[in-house]
Length: 419
Ligand code: AMP
Ligand code: MG
Image: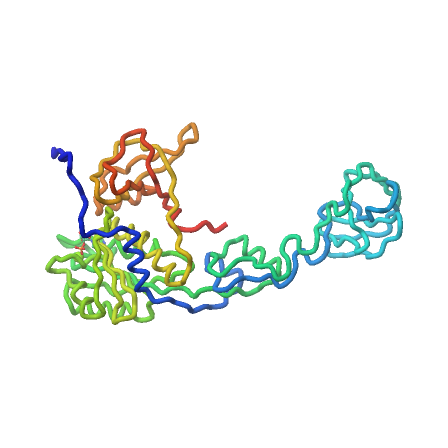
């Protein structure tokens, strides 16, 4: 077994940080400012392209919060005469004289001249004579004011907000039928490599199935993205050129995996050099370097992601997701993290931030724990499949010991809650 020398490091003086790479990418990205109008019920998870303003108050009339009796607080005594009913959807009279009241149900209009509701449980009734046994102590009791949920003209949500079920429900309550949203981003995902076959094909010696297009298309499954699988790129300049051209048709973004290292069969880089230029960065992270980016034919943003599936997935989450947000001028979303107790010793060399795959769980005492999925090489796709989080070990870290607290990023933190 190899023992690791004490001063071993994984640092590369030419490497840049994840944040630096994201800033470089953002500085080159075109902005997509095209919008569309959608019926509210189709808008879940989309982003508002303008502030959403309430066109009416909710509730639109003063409504009872209880089944009970509505009356004028200032009237004397605890006796009232019941003169009419006001049921939900069937408003009663608006005028009341001294000592009168109206029977109301929850959601019913409170008569204009009443200001207080006493609930059914706190009265006794004899024919049309009401006795208030426990009187409300303030006017306005159990009366929902006009606009107490939402005022007319109030901003319900600002431009850039992801539309949730709650926002959609509020829109429905306010009679809003259509929402203006950013249009979907069209992304073409392309795999590269002579060794790759589609599932369903028979593998010859030396061939493997293409995992990345399925993996990345799944990561990008989101109402804001329109993902298409491009023509597969073989390891020759003609195929690379043709596949890039067809990938760019109707695409806002192109993502390729593999084919950008300096291997003799990696032609993507040289073709991109001749069609817009390539930025190639070594990012101080593991797995995942190198990362390439360019504008195909000077316009369509292209991400050249690593070929190994775990690296391709992680670079999608860390670089492509923020770029997609940036191109729609959405505010950047810093990665949220949790702390968990490591149930294993975790090995790491200093010099790069490392994203190991882990299984986050809650122990009997309610504390978060994380266990490793084992082998962490970037071809080990089963680690990604078994895990439910990444364990993020900082640049300087030399690993962690059992019982130590580590930082984790649950998979779901890369998406957005849609309540
Ligand atoms: P490359 O950068 O093209 O040399 O690819 C690096 C490694 O990732 C090689 O082992 C490739 O076989 C593998 N690889 C590249 N693309 C894919 C893919 N789409 N699915 C599975 N493995 C891939
Ligand atoms: Mg390859």
